[in-house]
Length: 203
Image (spheres, rainbow, N blue to C red):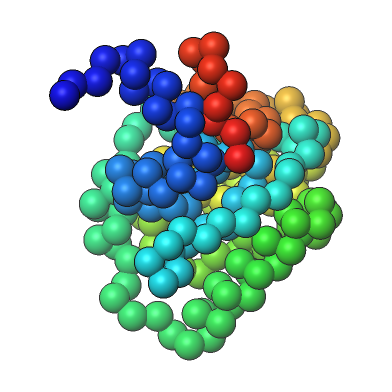
C-alpha cells in the first residue's frame, strides 16, 4: 500500500518530538545535528544504550549569532583529513572542561560566562589552514563587543555570539574578510513546525 503526501503528513503529525528525533537521527546520522533543527533552542544530545538522549534549554532572543560566510566552500572531507588521529591528554581534558562550561552557561542563561570558553584545541587550530583569517575575524568580533567566536563545524562559516552591538560586530568581522556574506541570526525557540493544519508535532 502506498501513502500519499497527505497521509505521510498526518503520520508525522501524530509522532511525538522524541519519536521524530529518533527518525531524524536515523536519516541524518547525528543527533547533535538533528536535535537543534527539530527542537530549537540549545540542545545536548547523543546515543546512550541505543537510544537518543537529549537535553534542551531555552535561549534568550537577545543572543545574536553574527555569522560570516566566506565566498568559498570548505570540503568536509578535507577539513576532517587535517585533524590528528590522536590527541594529547591535556587537550582532551581541556575539551571536556569547555564542553561542560559552555553547556552550564547556556543552561543557566549566563551568556557572559561564555567569554574565553571558545579556545578550542581539537579542530580549529588545524582547520585554520583552510581559513587563514579565522583567528583575525574572531578577534575583530570580540574587539567590537562579541562574547566570543568559533568556526561553525568544519567551516567555512564563522560565528560570533553577542548580546549587544551586533551591527558593529558584523562590520568588524567583515573588515577582516570582505569577500564574505554576513548574517545576523537569532535563536529559533520552536524548531521544526507542521504547517499542514494539524495540531501534532508537539512533545
